[in-house]
Length: 476
Length: 154
Image (cartoon, rainbow over the protein chains, first blue to last red):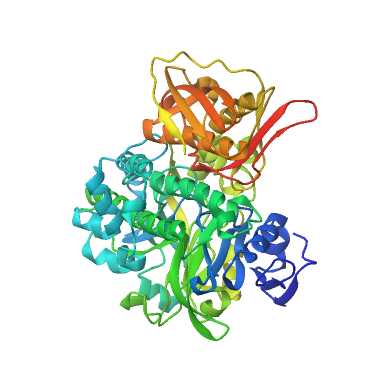
């Protein structure tokens, strides 16, 4: 990216002052190397976001930001309903409440090593993965409504998971204010056979080794021990979220002129928070957030069932479950004043610092775990919110490495079979329904996540706690 | 809004010529169709979307469905058409490899043929979550050829 339009305000922050239709500054959190690698589209898309009504503070891009649709991926923006602020279906995206969930296993790599291929096969067969897969749970309309209201709590009441899990899920596993009546029949139908399915693309279930500890106190609080394995799930609200996103994007794109909103890009489709369509979208999006949390709760349960075949009685306590495609009503300090704002995080993770009232008690002195997903072969990270996270970017941090190569380019560069064999040589077992999918998700197609988290820490967004490396990866 | 009717007895769609391609986007995929008419460009864009998932030639045209959409402009009509196909793929657990489209005014009548997903044979690479308004264009080029394109989220 050409940085001449930016003012460098710190070693890790680049700012564009408001001009033209911009209402607030645009800030990219990156060092020289990361920002120079970013596409110019990130700047263009972030500047577009600053023109939306009711935006407060600044529009932020995280260190892993890349060219998205509407918002950049890694974009964070907050809107004040009292100032005609908007909510944007494009600012949340199609995969509403896509997120990462990590369970502790207490097992060493050697324990996994003894059964590595057997447990990989068992997980692959027990957790529905990939296109066309269906879950065992089929919901009728009444059950669907209960799920959309109840989230992970609904799943728990159906026998999926353990009561202790809920404290370690954002919003206690159930976000208030869901309005299932705003979720269309088509969205419900699209979800009716998809509960407890992992999905496809960059979604995965992995057994990972804790390879390095960077913050001993935080690791102790989170239960992370070097040399032990964790189980991590990356997926979202499945077809329900995709359909809600599709329908509200369309409605908001068409109705924007009626609300006096001039969209710089149709994909930024939005509506005033205090409008009928805005309120219906919030109710539907929260239903999708509950769906995603229920979905990950079920998959966590399915994974536990598999582990218990190998190690009877093993608990797999939940370390944390956090989303990275959401819009949430939160209180933030804006220009020295506490304001209730709707924070859009598209490909960005909430990162609450120590002492925040929403934290589980066990983490209150540490901060919120920020789970950074890798992709087969590439490492993942656990970070934690910092005292500086709030002022840096509405308590937000990065969510992954981001691609450096398109799927087509990756497919031309690698063969899926070869990628699987190469990873096997490195001690990583892959199971996937598609060799082509594996080639498209090859580790080399992604940026170096270590650089991203290093900058996230230096920028005061989130602090490094542990580096995780894959042992077994089930790829959708 | 889009309306869908299933007509399993409908005759298979006969595409009206044209070609498709993917255009680069780092995280997602651009789908682009070209054809002598707007309808044929839409058919080819649908082919490009299917090709993001699997080889369209490997899909047997066993079942045919009808798709009808109405939208205030050609761009929204393209997004509606692609999203209607995604909806059928997701709910019927099918893949589609043949498309035919008739566009009159603001209305699209389409037929799509395909078969149930066979994971072994189709090895679907990724799931398309939705057609977006990014890089969305439906235009007639100076040479008379139509181009229909957008980014799809995968």
